[in-house]
Image 1 (cartoon, rainbow, N blue to C red):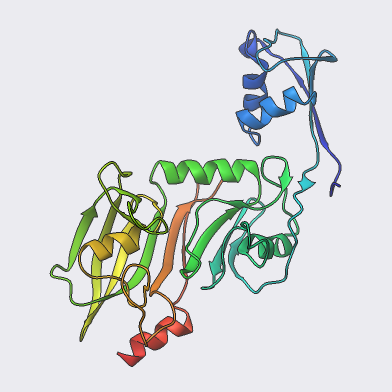
Image 2 (tube, one colour):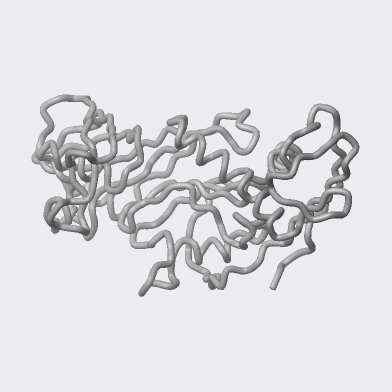
Length: 304
């Protein structure tokens, strides 16, 4: 089942592309397609040269006519569900959402629906699909009980751009975190490799041989028995901020996994408050977005 007609492009090979592999040629002339996506179309017989099927390694010559057919994205079987999610920004390539706490990002075994992806399927009518499938492109994740800003790609070009910005550490993320106790320093950097906990497989920890992980922080306000921080993860490891702050002896308030539950709040106090990046796919304009603390976290600050 498809939602629209396939896109067809007829391209003539020019002198600058003489002798290029067909998968490379398709990538250069169709920048909205990744090389892997273009190669998949070639293997599926959706790309022909002078009317003949080819392999990804086939070379093209000046004057060849390359026909590229990009089928309309197919449904993945995901169910679109109307789940309240605030859209902070949206254009034809991407959107920024303010994820509520308690919402899982991806469907998983035993949890097939009721996720952010299901919500986005209903929220984004102009979704062009990722990798040939009618689905939103999740660029980065937030834990189920972490609230705040997330980037979502609508198409392959945006997904590729945002993923590369993440890899190149060009995206600026700021979290508000309330921790137990009073930190010694007003600012600092936590540098500790993170991997799976050797004994508790559902937890992460600073371990020898883990992936390089770096978090910067600065104190926003000190309370009696608590400290409010801005945390800036330079890398993006699973549970990174939670693990790093716990390693200092200051776990997040309400974090039952790395610290202990709190009567002040029913989840850990962590909110993705600011997000800055270059708008994809051109990456010519820098934009920054903010999301205020949700009521449950603001109530904690009011109480203390």
